[in-house]
Image (tube, rainbow, N blue to C red; front, side):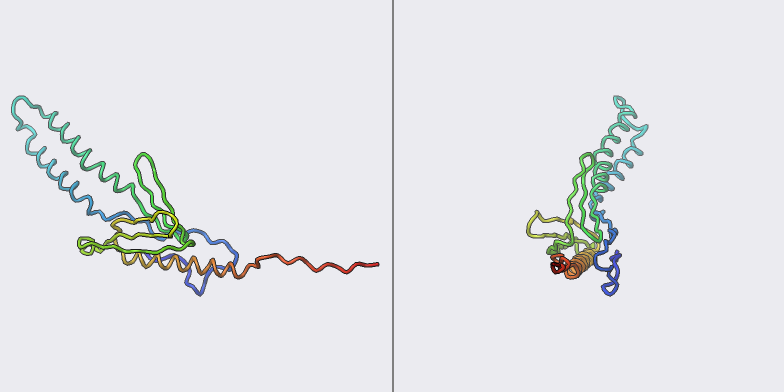
Amino acid sequence: MTPQTAPLGRLPAPGTSTSELRVARLRSNARRLLWSVLVLMAVSAAVGYLTGNLPAPFADWMLWAAATVIVLVLVVIPYLRWAAHTYTITTRRVIEQRGLLVRRRVELTHLRGYTITERRGPLQRLWRSGTLVLSDGVDAPLRLVDVPSVALVHEVLADQVEVSQIIAHRDSQAIPLSPQAPPADPPQS
């Protein structure tokens, strides 16, 4: 998860456009799926034990139908929600995408600059994860919740902001603000 930009000594030439490269794509820590794994194990054990051993008014198909509903609601849907929520860091911006049926996308460009606040609870410290809050002072803050390797992601974001601002400052200094008109020829009589 190292930045894919050129070192500061080899920045692109002034005025040239730079392509946007993906630096990292992240999801929140997978420990949120622990309860889903425990439910899946319990349902599997119960179905394995109770198949063929149910009392008379119940049939095996009822057991399998109930197990399917439980697994769908408590295992598959939480997994899909977790998998559909991604954070992408590129050389130009940070993108948060979420949603199964309706996709929601939030972007924050490095060029505008933003503050990075890192929050880590006791369990997050144990798993080396944390929450990063990116605030540019204008829009609502962008929260990267429970990101793994939070210290490395924090460093990458700070580096990307610095590189973007250096390139923008350099390009603004290299381009004249007002075009100069060629000198007028003296009138000939």
